[in-house]
Length: 86
Image (tube, rainbow, N blue to C red; front, top):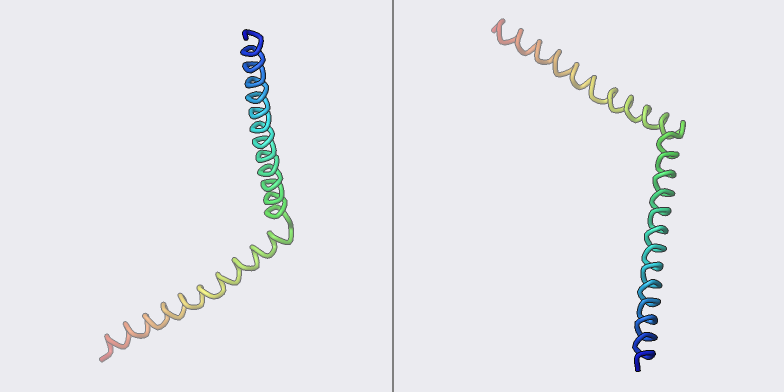
């Protein structure tokens, strides 16, 4: 009877160890996957094409908004001058 209890305890310990190994394997795989994802993101962000495209978009946005601000400033100046004349 004692041998049977000892065998059951040993079997439970083996199962517990296997579960822990499986959990560690899952965690290791998740870390490797995230590391790979971060590496690809880093490579994408440091790619010369990506940086050039980002600069192009930034310049386009600046070109869109600066003329609008200049038009507003000029029209504001004309309107202020118009009010003073009449």
